[in-house]
Image 1 (cartoon, one colour):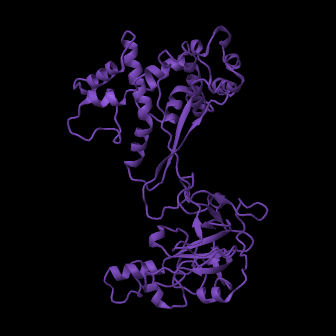
Image 2 (tube, helix red, strand yellow; image 1 turned 135 degrees about the horizontal axis):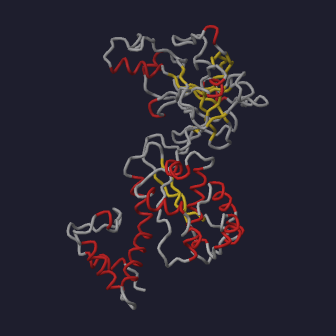
Image 3 (tube, helix red, strand yellow; image 1 turned 90 degrees about the vertical axis):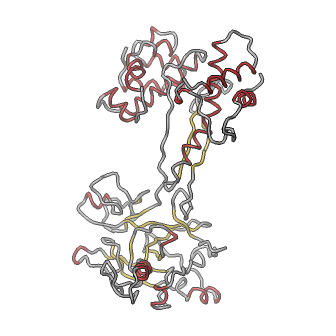
Length: 451
């Protein structure tokens, strides 16, 4: 038997109705008593086991080899794995039909971005098109540009949004390149850091870029824009006016070009799009590099943080701005993050007293250190791998079997240099003994459960 991709997808969809419904959805399923019996005769399963899954491979590539270019081939292979896991659970004492370890790689959200062109094809009822990343799935579209405008022959820079930590109000954010250019001139030994640098542009305020870059190295300018990002107009108070020079309560209007992401005037790095410019009026309510201090602010590395949210008036506390970027992590220093989110049940149709099919979902910051994520997976998988090693020994020996005997067999196998390293039980860093020449029998005796 060799079901089609559509057969597998349909059958997997019948799992909540029970195994009888699954068999009925598979061609020739009426001749099988169990799912395991059916898949033991499935030529696709045999091919996966004998040819395609002999080494690590991507799911998409394996699906293409198995089903060719048939529609839904990747979804079909995912359905196959789900069906096989269910079939194996019918007779847990037997060898798995398709021994598989799946690794899921989840990309962190790369912020929230909008296109502010009023003629963007993605606008609906006056609301702008929204994107979870500056990178488009279309390789022809340059990073940071709206893919919908590009498909219509237009050019538009995406703007990253920030949100209030307390009330969730949305604002636009731009990076001011003026301080970075002045810093680069100082580091290169220029006599005057405010003269044009290597890029030929003189450092100045409001030299905007839509790529916010690293927060620690960047100076941001926050703004609102018409109906897409309306400004809440907070009521001024004397303390607030003194702290922020009234800009928070009286935003500065400016003409900003959606085509290039630059300000139209009043800067050495202004828009130069000519007839292709698409100007929008923005309301600048805060600059981390303020203009009221003149060129001194450009030459200084001191940031002036947003004192409070214009909407809910939540204040800057302990040097943390009331707004944040909409990314998966608020990490601004690049520290690694590899976090086990949960073991989640993927067999809700089964009796909870039975063995459940489970997956480990993890996510990691895009700036993770290389060792953090694999180390985490080793720690999470060790109890399952250890359990399988013990079960394998118990099956080979005649019962009853003392747990000390199991520990001795584990130690013997682990110390045997003739056994390839990849066939031995992998011990995570957090489990390995500290000494150079450990007593493996004592080590495994301590880890084998006495029951």
